[in-house]
Length: 368
Figure 1 (cartoon, one colour):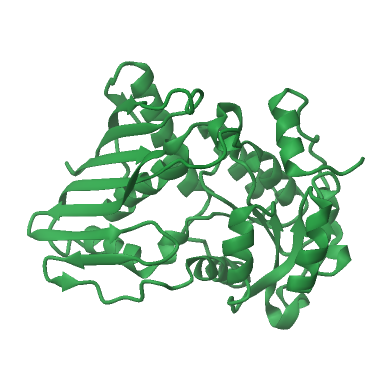
Figure 2: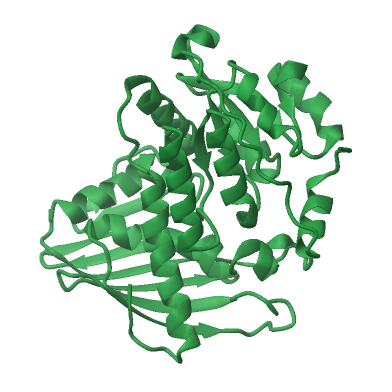
């Protein structure tokens, strides 16, 4: 089958042509020592901006894994990536021959960095090819898809991790510690917001519901849901939400700005917001005996945080992606669970679906 670029692939999918059928190619995973000095080989599936500017450079800094292969639908990207990262031709795939990766012992992990509507397909194909899988957030288009992805990886005895890089970032890890250990008493109120003013292409896949599942909530809001969840260490039980849209000509199919309230079993309440039309980036907590916050919470670097006792003394510019991928590689080598498994993505999707239900029902209080 002739290869074609991802834009054409996405465009054809959106027109109803459909994705390539799953091919259940299965092979045994090579031993950890089969790659460079016991480093595990990662293949990036999709070479968009996140792979290009974050993941690939991070793999030059990792200790336990390295960039072994690429999967792209754009032939013109093959040579520059091969030269830049010393990737041999036999480790370069496209979306049609992807399943042949099963026969390549140099690749231990596939990292799915594709538009959301393709996450399920390539996660399942990766697991069936005998590879462990990292899937970017948000995990999938629905709770049902998340469950299918988890099931497929368990069926193939492959590990599945979601790209929640902030679980390895020191400022956010401190928020987890302060909240879950009740350092300042029980968290009472959480204020979490994440968003930016959309200035990109109006034809972007992110603005098409069939390809992205939603707008600012799916892309930016998942960070705020995560923040509220990992600060409390609890799962929310109820949510109410409302949507605001000031640029309907741009956000015709997806949400622009959403405000929501989460209720936790202990009584903690989180007021969250996500947007494609506002600049927010914070996670603030009021507790029984003080407060703690991140005024720069979700970026790739430049974090900033403090508590009632003073500034948080951490490196604001660690390589989050390198830490994330190294941790997953170690989990595989040591046969221990990842702290961000597929179930973590599933929990977020349950909250997102409840938020959308609340909006559809006029701001009703929905059980999660």
